Amino acid sequence: MKRQLDKLGRLVIPIEMRKELNINPGDELNMMIMSGGIFIEKRGCIFCGRTHAAIYYGGIQLCEFCLNSINEQAAK
Image (cartoon, rainbow, N blue to C red; front, side, top):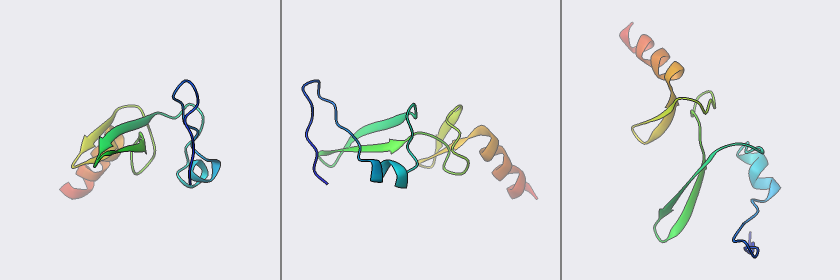
């Protein structure tokens, strides 16, 4: 898909992409420069989607609740 920046430098993420990635108004997104391009990802836990208290662990985002659940399961 091809899009143009508006006069203020904004870019609209097409609805098809937002639906596929479950991106909704008000969601937080991370933006990074990678390999000469812009990489955008939805911020939040990869398991439950919570955005509060999300931490990076091994290159993925987890919330404290899911990380604690994983640790509990691993301890069994």
